[in-house]
Image (cartoon, rainbow over all chains, first blue to last red; front, side, top):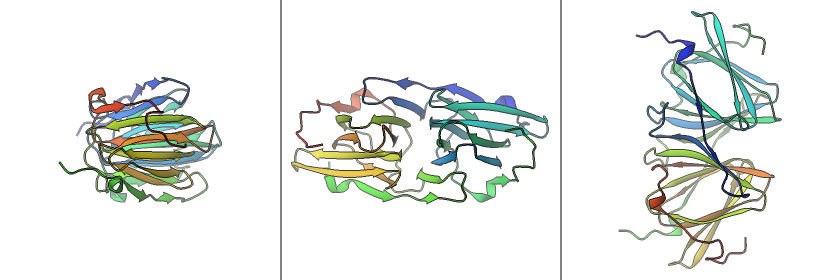
Length: 142
Length: 142
């Protein structure tokens, strides 16, 4: 099995379409897009300002992360590379992050009182394919 | 082909999971859920307070609508039944509306300055399968 690297994480620009003053349309993911593998589940996760959810690692799931409201700092970590990778996305910097399985990650709300993450994944939620460790297991200056 | 009815629209309760003070997780749709047919595309549509987007009718697409932020009034219309159906959903009344093809619909932002709709659909955006008429084509007291 190929060793996963932090360089395998893809960050994809997404379109915001502003047709009139009633409100924008923002792309997320479609079947023909980079990052689409299969459909398992899509869900939302709110992250309050200054709060951190960390660390998780999926064994099978590829994540497709977007932040339609607010702004969120995602931090990715691989013990083998002993390196962190930081990506900040949100409404004002609207992108999708594609995260292959095998990478530790956490995230922090950095703009609004509440910030909205959505994850589109190729497998349904299954506690057997996700590992979780305490926030202080990997020391990062959030 | 079976005639579609406003009664074919399904409104499904969704779970909000509040594990701690960092922010809730909210379900949207998974492969085994009612309303899942196939995956084509998922996107967001902001609707500003008091603004209305109407009317559209999809010929092939089944819509799965959620409102993770704010609150939105959806109105569905069938000329054959000469009847409107109204469903208001949002963060405080968190549900998913499954809309089969063949039904006219529109929506209005009714809570925050900006309200966030997401649609998970079984086909990718295609202008050939969507009909659009002016807001005043069907008279409704929004």
